[in-house]
Length: 144
Image (cartoon, rainbow, N blue to C red; front, side):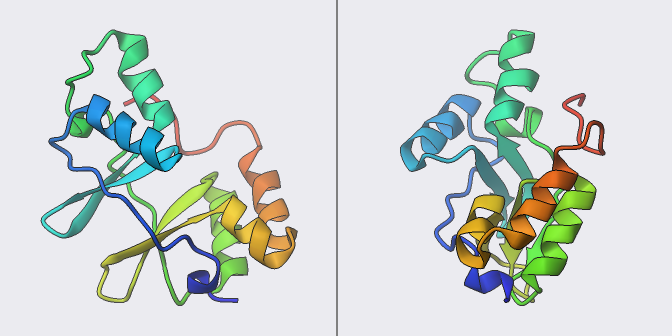
């Protein structure tokens, strides 16, 4: 199965200059825990609800703090024509639960989450990925 067959294709994008409060409101409105961050038609980061909690609220930052100050700028992504099983393996290895999906022109076309995969493949690929993601440690720390 291809990523395009499992991904969520409606994606809201935050601006790096937007406030974290505005980004959090978007997350609340769409019931999502992650927002891709785009600038000049390019993906420049990812913002999670955890980034807001750990990199902003826990440090006493103001709600008007810019998204760019708390987002992760090391963006991992996959292509819409990639194989889901292979992408899930990469997600497990890198301990990532959600990936932005781009087309071959590197334009954002969706988000792939473990939940997306679980509901389309019966849980086989997502289960293996979750097992790898749930291991302690990994490359993605909240330290900025």
